[in-house]
Amino acid sequence: MTKAELINKIASSTGSSKAEASRTLDITLDSIKAALKKGQKVTLVGFGTFSVTKRKARKGRNPKTGQAINIPAGKTPKFSAGQALKDAVKK
Image 1: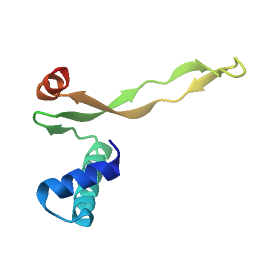
Image 2: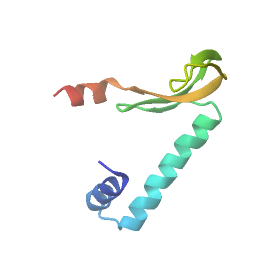
Image 3: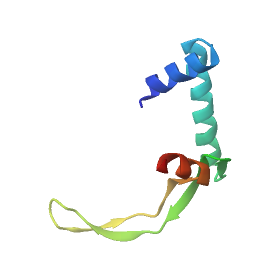
C-alpha cells in the first residue's frame, strides 16, 4: 500500500476529503518523527512502538574495493510490532 492509497482509504473511511486525510496523515507522521528526534518512544497500543536505538561505531568493508572503512556511531529508528498487529498478520 502506498501513501496515496492509504490517504484514499482514510478519506473513504472517515468521509473526509483527500486533502484533509493527507494533512492528518502528514501531521501524524511529523509528530512521530519529532518525538523520535527528541529520543522519545511513540507507543500506539495494539499497533506497536517506534523508538530510536544507538549504534556503536564499527569497522566495515567497502564491498566494491574490499578496503576497510570506519562506520561512525549513529542513531537509527526502530519499530516493534504490538501483539494485536502480530496476531492480525498471522490470521
